[in-house]
Image (cartoon, rainbow, N blue to C red; front, side, top):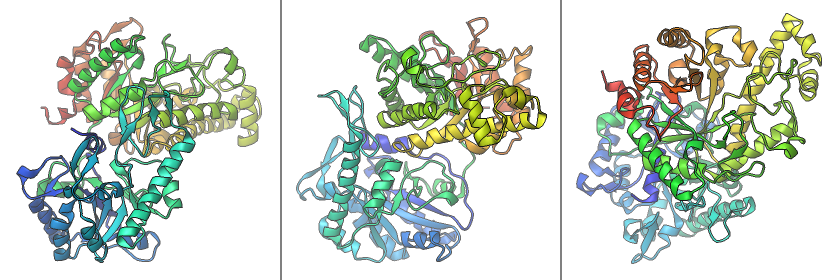
Length: 640
């Protein structure tokens, strides 16, 4: 399967919530073919199905509106009709002129057509380089057809970029990645593209397609449709700077009422849906389960590149056999198992690069298995070595302890925060990932942070005395300190997401939480964590459902109690991921696969939708996939 198709399939949204009458949904179509036998790609639809979709929309009181209607709605100049739908068609196929345009005229439906200038620039007798596959130019619109369509009041021509609908080499191993969001790797110089060159490349391409569309339609586009739905904050700014104020993407499960004109989400239709499936997409479906494998990249790394590739292949096979739809993948090196990052698995400016492996592994997992990859990263636990450490500020405790055991940079120091921001920015520049999961180092005990920089911060920003003893000596001040620290850790995580979104957007953000926070009201003071705060701010909450780590006398009962304590939190069913332990760290022995399976079964019976486990050991086949797959797989919802 060619690169372009793999990438599109990677980002298909698999569940959608119902929307209120004042909202709108946007449908993303591609090629339209005559019959089922003509389907070559998963996003092809047959003309009879498309006609049925249009008929169903009309018969069920859906109103097809234009991009202009959305612009006026967002400006407060008009109301949208109930159940508003926008139609978009990508890539500029000839089938739009042959099949879609007559249907639009018959139903009086407006639509947006996104074209790639470099493809249509090819002479009629030539071939278009579509990903890595050359295909006949005749598969796309002729220039005369494009000109005719542009004169129709039903069709708006949008930019699909001039030459960014392709892959560029994104890592040392030679993987092609989306051109819009990738800092290209030069195999000759063994260097990544500079930010200046990256921004210049994107801007010049957008300008080129604007000029090309203006030349052939006499109209300058105002809409950009990002190839593969991938974009970032930098690209958004560049698009606006050249007049592309409206942007269409493929953001997964975004709240529709929060969509701005520069990031309008679309539903990507695949597998030629039946009319029933089409209706289900629009009406909303039940939440889809999130099943997670949490992976130590330290297990996969090997100084021998050939062995490392074999290890990665073994991991891919395990992920495939597991049936999970998400992987939390370690992006930092932690050889000693301290939970502190002393190296990174990606190119960066501050820590040693153990191997440029994270981007390779995450891309392989995503494109080959269609599994979402979250970069597992510390929030504060980075150790750059003795020399650089002198220029940073560290979390301190009033009793000299290390709190939860992680050496952490102080979140109240601007220079430490900037150091961490740089790392997250580099992660987004040089790798691919779907989301970020924050490590369990994102915590401050009831004795932390007592560093001088933190005490000054409390006094200046929170009006607290510059002494932990004075703060904790007052119940009122102690509670204020607890709440402010909880908010500070959350806000810093959200800030890091924003930093990463400069180069990778959209991103999902998850965060590890200790189970005690859910079970004991006093635990927020001990950890500066709050489940309700997490559910309000993060896309998912990875709750460490690890009974042996919590010294539970009856592990199964403890897990049942944990679900009972958390299932009624607002949004808990959709957002909480119960992360089970596959290893007993006290005994240093693996949890029997049968026991792990039984825990998963119990969680499902209790009504938990989302769960996973940590760690996975591909070399000992633990846990045994043949034992746990029936419960772990996303297919488990239909197993009874």
